[in-house]
Image (cartoon, rainbow over all chains, first blue to last red; front, side, top):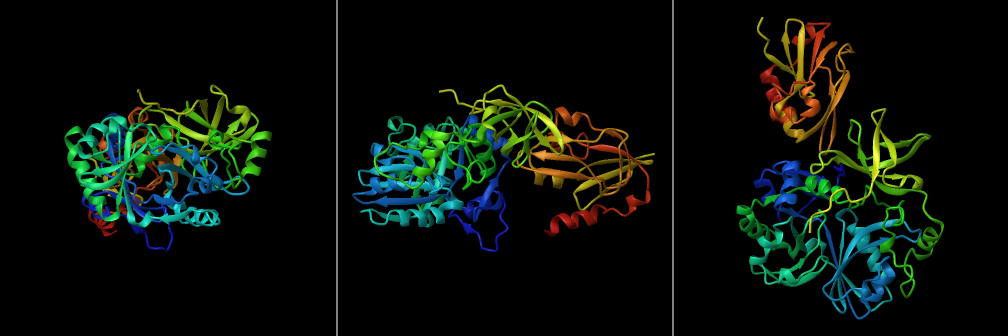
Length: 371
Length: 126
């Protein structure tokens, strides 16, 4: 995932804090980001058992305003943001005309005529341009605040207890996939109950220069509870256990939402046309030629991105993400395979360094938190 | 005969000699760079390795790294403890986390490896 571009890397407002914490910094999606501090496994466990703090300022924040903002987004994306109540959010995608996924997104409705679209860092310039283009002709304007917004997430079972004393937002009234406006440590903030870890948690959006203040306030409030800083390495193992796709691994321009098991996100029957509708309607009607499945490797070996998946007849697919699951203590993976293999319990094999290692198809997610 | 001093490679492995038997492992530096080691794959005894040949892999949560034979020889033992406890490669890379033992075919190769000072320079230069 390290990028070897000649382009200088963007730095988040928190980079000096990461350096002072002796984080290992890598180039990711054009940004200099912490991949780990204490170690991926320790950070992963902290989020599952207590809470962890993440700098996600590389993500894109695209605000869409105007009387037709909802209609315009409904035409630009596969979901229907008009159905969102104010203060609620949903998972969405931007697709191309051919149904290929340009990015996966979270859309928050902040007001009747104001939405926030959060995009993946590496795709933000593309999504921003495409959205500006797709909003043309609608009474809606795009305000790309990606470079002036800091995003800090606190994720884990103790996240609410750590955050509540610092914020004016009533967290017990903030449901999963909801967003509220208030202050955190006295700083104006949007507080969303969303995340990418499979745990309860919050994402706090603030003005760029206040990022370090939010981080420090959350760290000070959480240190006694065992809250530790967490990098992109733990974020990746956490989201994989939670069965959440990563753009660039499970999703890209050559995959469509139905193959990824995300057909429910595509609202084919929403009023009005949207980009990709015809192609996606055809996929929905004809079915898919491959399916994203979860795999637990039962033999000795760890499945990794790009490793072939075999059935008795030969290669049937490819691993998109794989690691040793810190929570399960076993190697887990996601892979695209022929749809005939999507039933849990199916035995396949992952080709690990020329050896066929047995793996079993399992239902996603691999990990579900106790509620 | 007491084991020799440790010698090192640019691939961040170490070798220690006891007679013609070379014990091979990864360095503390490599262990730190890899992070949490979660899987180690090693050759069976009897396998003959050329110098620099790939003989296995060590995997962290995030990455797969090849292991290279620092010297030529026949594998006489591989560290079975790493199968159940791969984290030994992090906890005690110069001790219980050793990888393989080789019967060297060309003992002269040992002298061509980096000594402590040269390896120290290598890992602090970057």
